[in-house]
Image 1 (cartoon, helix red, strand yellow):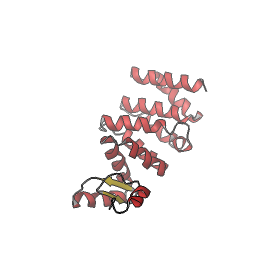
Image 2 (tube, one colour):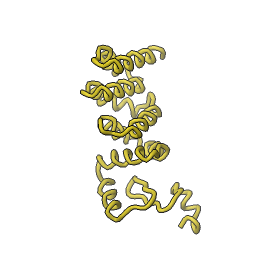
Image 3 (cartoon, helix red, strand yellow):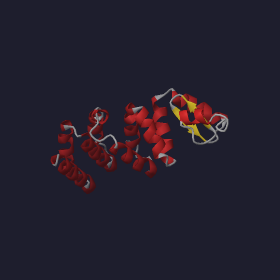
Image 4 (spheres, helix red, strand yellow):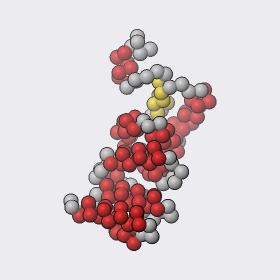
Length: 172
């Protein structure tokens, strides 16, 4: 009861009701028993984390997604799962981009370089382009050969992203 215990609501970061925490997931609004059961199942799975982040970004809840990643930086790998899904909607793609910018040069992002290198070779040009950009954000020298390889990409947009990324890295 936020009215009776505003200090507890503030401590938990509750801003609306109903609010519930299931594992590391914070849910706002009304949910059916079936939805809550699904979130309980998701809370104990790796795919559930990607689903949670996708739900937040789809709903335009970038600040909540940002907060979740600050608490759990290792969840960055799940953003890459979403990034590698060509069916992810535009809100998710834009949200991933905004969140990845916050990991610029971080060890957490550098740990994802091998996976990003692999994604830079994906059959989908959009995924290759995003991976190339995020490799640049890693600031890892290990990423440079993979970015250079994209200079010969079949898709113009990917070649442009690779060139811009290499230019940015050279200015450091």
